[in-house]
Structures are given as structure tokens and as C-alpha cells.
Length: 439
Image (cartoon, rainbow, N blue to C red; front, side, top):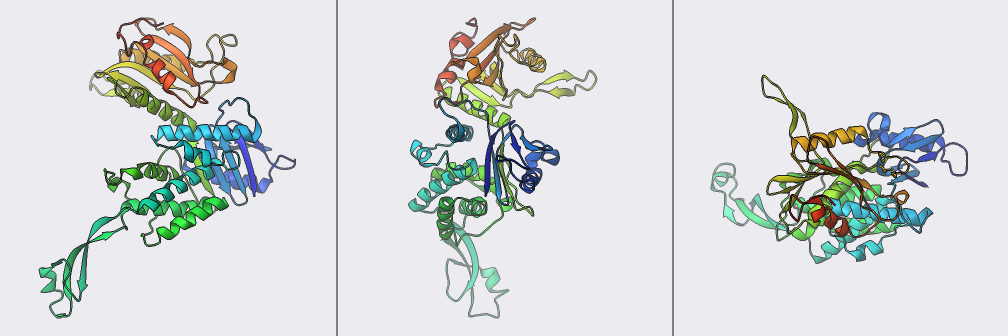
């Protein structure tokens, strides 16, 4: 089995050479990328098939084909490590971002048990799911009373009088019964079984295979459904089964319902991919919701939806706006955040810090449409900017009383409470006087 790891925007050579993979392996990986709905035209959104190398794009995750696995990791700076150790730390941070974005409660003990340096991101997520599912199954599989109709030799439940004296009129040895039976064959367990079945086919780890096959034994009597046939809208989590919420979210993730897509087909491949721009936005939004919990501030992702223009005759709106994150107080927009998954520059290298003109125009439109006093362009921090993350620059927007800040967030910091508090501090006019000046 060929296994390679590259960073986003990195490359994997193929052909001859000690670090290169064979051309046929490269072709198989490209075929899997093309089969993924996230691959775009010819799989180019995930991999570029160059003359001598495969070029990774801004989609991260794992592509697996016959005899070869390619893992694409995000560019997150980690200190004091390189090679496999650095990749292990990046995997840990990426799983942390996924956990925050999906609002999963992953205990530190479960995180410690995972083989961050030895396994790919796919195997780590599979291992996390298998461990959590095994723990819950030991506590008892959820069951529910289901309605049944059957023709029995003895009465059970209630007699279906209509059926008894029509369909069974000539069968006095049979009674048309209606009854409720406590059964584990319910939607929640069907989702878990579908996930276990999918992961058994995808995992190449002996340890994960062992855990999954043990789980498959427990779910042997549950009806098998294809992931596309699962009635997710019919799933209700209440106080009786709320402990399964994290597993349901992991199942959605691994079956392709959030952030990523999985695919398998004639090319015998599997993909687990994430758009880092969308994941970064969701991670920031969820982190702010946690930081502002218990306050009068509310966080709204992809909200707003005001139009830039209005048709003079019909009044129809044109050019809808959808800011990444709105922070509101009592319905009034106090802060607009636009997340950017790209590296900002130092002021000494570029006075504009790499901020695009289009991004500035967009934020100016937001300040006018939403009458918002504070706007923030948020980027991931990297070592080239120095040690401390935070606000990099402050500018006033002409013709309005709004302020536009450029800031970074350190993704290697295990706790995001500090920057969440900074966003909500009086310097942004959110927790103090709404009219307080910027620092």
C-alpha cells in the first residue's frame, strides 16, 4: 500500500524517483477526485493532474484508491515539530476544528488514544466513531415500540375486526392482530449500522476493522439501508436518546451530509474531503456562539440576505448579500465578520497585507446595507506574522462611521476563549457601550 501526505497547495510527484508514486497510482487518485462531487470539472478542485506531479488545492482530506492513499492536510503552522510529528499535530487541530464546527463533545481521553502520527485523518475519524459507538452500545441499544399487524394463532394486542371478517373470513385458525412491539430496528440504529457498513469497506486499519466488525455483530438484526435511503428528517433526538447526538453528527460527517462528500464506485475508491474555507467559517461561527453564550449577543452564520440593488419599477431585489457571520444585539447588527482561509502578509512586505480590493469593496457594501459600526476580516495566523495573533490593522470606512479591522486567529491554540472574548470586548463596542470608540 502506497501512502503519502501533502499539505494543501502542495504537490505529489509521480513517475520515477524515490519520493514519486507510479503513474497508474496517480491516475487512480485522479479518478477518485473526479468521482467526488467536490472535485468539480475533472477533479480539479481537489487535484490538478500535472505532467510530473499531482497538485493539491484548497480541499483537504483523504483520497483512497486501489493500493494508494493520499492525505491532504491544511497549512496550519505548528511549532517544535516537523515531518510525521508536524502532520500529527495538524491532524489533531483539524479534528478539533471539525469537533467545534459540528458542536461535538470529544473528551480529551478519546483524543489521547488516537494515533495522530501513524494514521491518516480518515482512520482517525473512523477510530473516533468506533470507540464512541462501542461505549454507547455497551450502555444499551435504543429501542422503541413499533406498530405491527400480523395474522396469528392466538390474540395479541387488539383484534382487527374489519380484516378478520373480510380477508380472514375463511380462516378461523387465524386472528388479525394489531399490537406494539419493543424493537431495536429503528432509524437511529439504522443510521449507525449504515455508517458501520460504509466504514468497514473504507478502513485499512487492522484495529479499526476489528472494532467495526465487533459492532457489525451487535447490529446484525438491524435492517440494512443505503445511506441515500436513510430518512434523516425523521430522526428525533430527545431526553431519552440525546446521548447519541455526537454519534449522529459523526455519522452525518462520515456519510457525506456535512462539509465533505464520500464516493465509491467502479474505480473502487473512497474520498473524505473538506472545503477549508467553509470549515474555517463554521469553526469561527461556532466558537463565537460558545464565547457569547449567556449574553445578549447572538451569532448568525450566512445571515442577512439584504439586496444591493432594487428594481425601480418592480421593486425586485438584485445581488443578494450573505455575510459569513453577523453578531447581533436585540436584532441590530453590531459586527460583521468575513472569514478568509488564506495567509495574510506582514505590513513590511505589503502595506495592504494581501487583502484583496474585492474584499474591501464587499465590506464597504456590508457597512452601508446593514448600518454596521464594526467589520472584521479574519484570517488564520501563521509564524511569518510573529508570535501573537489578533488585530493587525484598523481602518475607518469613508462616508460611514464604520471601522474595518484585519485580524488573525491562532489555530494551534487549544483554547479559543481568549480571542472570542477579544471579539466581544468593549474595543469592538459589543459588551460595553455600543458607541464606544475603537482601541
